[in-house]
Length: 283
Image 1 (cartoon, rainbow, N blue to C red):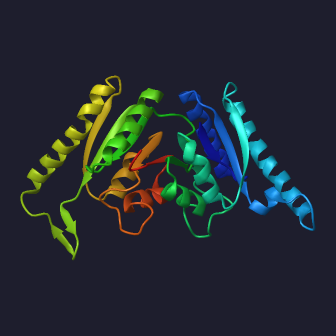
Image 2: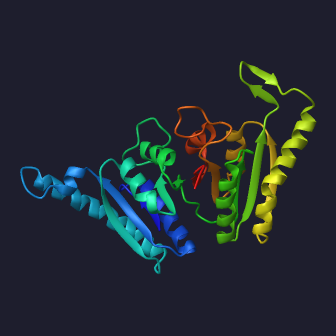
Image 3: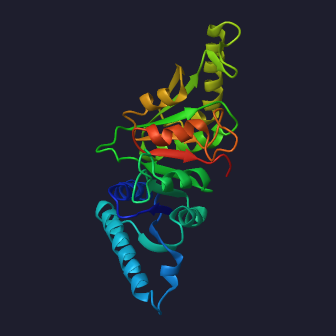
């Protein structure tokens, strides 16, 4: 099952469109979910019963609009709806615990003014136990390419597992991007010791080794290997400009203690040009 959160916004409907296509490709049901205050779900009598009923009716209207969008795009898809009690971040995280994938829009009614990504999208991407896709805008037409960022950490295996499976499902090419930097950042910017050309060759071998087993497992997926010198955020944003999906890990070399997400995945929530998949470190 795939769960998609809606809130009545355009971003929510974009998320539904992406999730519906993904659910159809995977052959699984789609659950369209919307969260309201817990007391509104439970109150049937008393002075606030009319307000609670009004809130439930509003939630049902939001859900029906989302479900209708999904059914129009994928008529054969099984679509369910659910009103969730509580804070939308916590409610969606709970709902996604048994899901293959949790999908949200990047902005919506809960977004904080001035932020490029909504608080719900950030909270879900940072704390959900399942993989999360944040949809900024669904591409008008598919371009047949998925981009995956590889950082060489142990968590790259889960990221590659998702990316290769997604490319195979969509019959798309997979662009594997590995970014390295000639400069160390810690106590000032310093050149990496040694010959930077040797470092580049080392990074290239690291990418080859990371891809080796997966290329054998998915022989029909065309892989484009790309080594980029520079900042990961800039490189991934450029690589994903024409991609159908960008795939990154939830943490990695750029992870900072105390952050819900690694620094790169956090930045990509704000700067990814299209749908972004944030993959859990563990399964």
